[in-house]
Image 1 (spheres, rainbow, N blue to C red):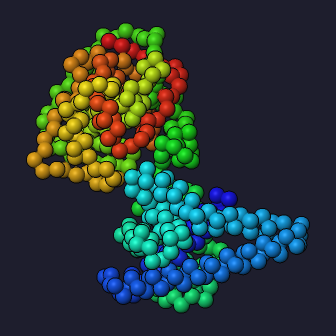
Image 2 (tube, rainbow, N blue to C red; image 1 turned 30 degrees about the vertical axis):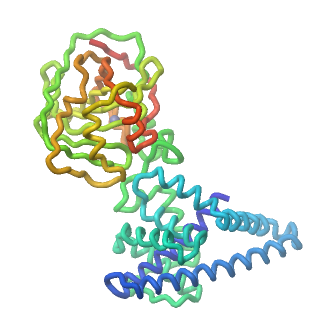
Image 3 (cartoon, helix red, strand yellow; image 1 turned 120 degrees about the horizontal axis):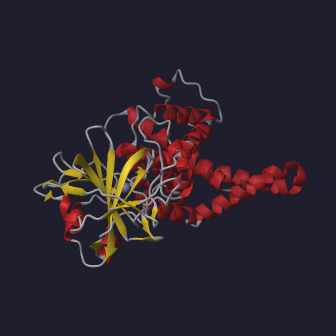
Length: 416
Ligand SMILES: [Zn+2]
């Protein structure tokens, strides 16, 4: 069932890509004429789909009569009937909207799929359908997508649609089944083959932490992974850490996985006198580290690097309490949607404002807590927690972005 829906959406998405590739290529710059043309095309596609649906219901009737001989066809027809039902009452669109609204920044493919489902559910005249296609157009890098566009155009041409096949498409041969299959493969690999999309990972679903290892082996095979559940017995060590963080211009971004603040050179962490430069800090909700099995509301990870390239992370746990003035400043400028770094004018920030007074810590050798989960990262989780208001936790634009705790294996957690 899910696969069938995915196929229908992919085919529609490809049709959408075809239209846009075609109109885009035909004349540079959008015009109302183009929009009208799109609407006509969309209407045609919808009509075509309706006739397909009729065919399907006929097939379903036949399947009933022919029973066993056409059992697979019957099953398929029923599945498609269910798809049609779900689309007509808006269930799939609702699900898709709910699911996608949680994601910060949709991939081109998903935006295209969403546009296609809108087209099917609401019709081609609905403003949100047109808007969804327009967003797709903005997102699409047409040069890199030319193969997809060519595939869609050839498929449409083969289906008897009046489509101008781009001259660039001449050399590309497309088999009848190719468009949907290419789309499905691309999705299965999470767009990893797309030079414009970074390998995809997430905090839930098929790309969630339990599957990171498929694309990033260290995440599954590493023996000193972070985060940890911090509990005794601890090893007492004589080691001291001290920070010297400086005021600087606020540079903040939403990278799709967290809110990150990039720091200009000059802010230092010293571990027994050895200097590490603060590169950036970012947030997880709830805290990735557990203290005796319990998470804090959030955690800030301050990421440092020394001249030899070694990484050290200082973790500051945030507990629910009074408003945090430092976070108030940050949240006032945080980008709600995924995108490049922003530097609001005349806002300076000192990361030291987010630290507790006491620097006592738990320490262990760990890893990056996001793919590729690179190891040999020194972790210092501060024992003193810092307040954050419940509203401020709620205003963080990610519902949950914490990797589950990892096995301790041979490690011993140290404390000063
Ligand atoms: Zn982190």
